Length: 229
Image 1: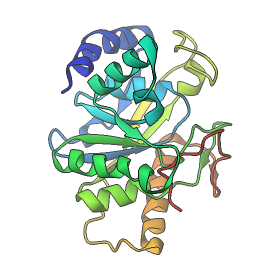
Image 2 (image 1 turned 120 degrees about the vertical axis):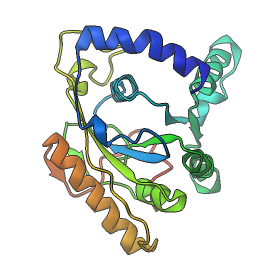
Image 3 (image 1 turned 60 degrees about the vertical axis):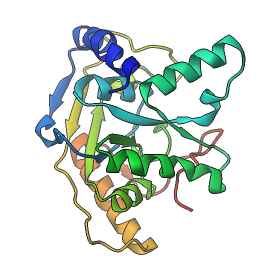
Image 4 (image 1 turned 90 degrees about the vertical axis):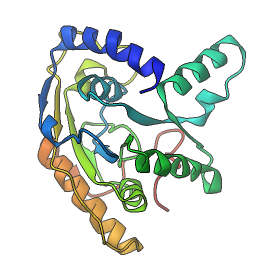
């Protein structure tokens, strides 16, 4: 586990547990060893904080490559922190550069790490669950690891879009893990990837109870480059 991530587990995680007392369900579905793709709904930037708080193992999150390339003191600190946390840089420009995130994630998964993917590609603008992109299924097939569905509840109330930090007492946080989905032996053509992704989103919806919208979420200012074409 990266040093800064370990420090966070010893400092930030206990603080969040004490302040919010999150409910955790299905933790037995998180493998004790070996790689896996965590695929969850995305309501708030706090999703990463609470997911990292309740999972005892290291989680590798994707982060915008800009955060690794900043200049000055702020840029140096950002790069130091994200590198120290074991984050995987994602190019926002798309094309071959964007695929570097997959290139980095696959060996991490094969090496036994856990990688977090948000199939919707962006935070939900209204609390609904939108159609998933195929990246999680592609990663799982390429690395030969299972997908663990994750359902986050209440994070959008604890830290609404536009706020800097989670607000204690503002919401009840629940984190639910579903049974691992094993896609071993499934073909990796476009149709099959779509079917697997729909299966993943169905399991997430069962965990969260969100209303499902069968279309992609409205894009933010910079669309997620790891989405499928």
